[in-house]
Length: 358
Image (cartoon, rainbow, N blue to C red; front, top):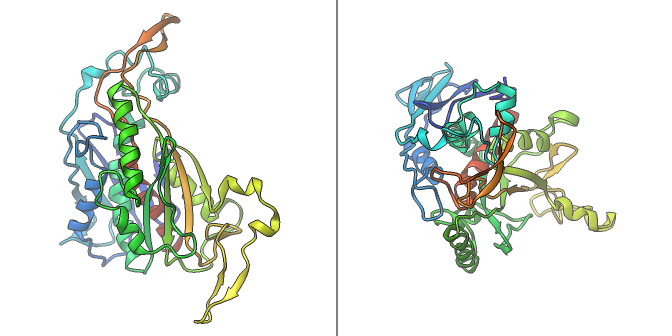
């Protein structure tokens, strides 16, 4: 069940980067919900390759084809299955990877685990290509959450040493989400966008890549959602987020910043606002206490590694001969994965949140 997630809704992702199609099955969606296909297509376009100077030139339309679960665009209670057909593949770029693994990729571990029977082309089922069906599921979950008054947004908060403006942890709004959408680099601050662009294009020009961080927020979340211990909100969101191959870390609220704080600095004082709602004056806890939503915005950040496929010669090994060798990675790759990873983070978060409240 390695590619299945969820307790109340079950999401199963299938396919490989260069298989004939990739897809997702969602079981447990409520019947009677009309999916806005235009909104879903616009969401998927934010992740799609080939649309930016910062992305791989591999061009895929990423239009979902629904096989079941809908009648006239409305969920009918049956498992919903959608596929995206892969139309732009180059398997010859990956012929040698079963023997000579790419540094930073799953080629070596997959070879050992699957004893050479894995699909090495494009990274197989370890590829970031599988975030396309993740975004189909997440895009639908985002619509279901919006109908419940819950909104999720994300932006690039850092690339290399350049940082964007952070969300106000107590007062983030839908307008803040819209401020970064529609940009090649989804950031709030235009000055940061210019500096980040220079960083990415510099690394691209020498065949290298660069990483960074994404900040995500959930607003409108009811108080009291989540469980202690293993099914806390942090646990479930983190599990879903790590389905995105490039993610290497996550922190909620102040995250690792709490290591430099005292208890009086870290604790968020409670107060009653003018509407009689209990809130906290600050939000160092990131909207989650004891694994349960506090009613404050849920705020977290994820670390995104540099794209491991780079055009610079690297050291590797020939697995069958156990000989050291050199490797230059072929194929089409993103010099920075963060612009396309932003909707993936929103999607993965939406899946976890909906699963917990449905």
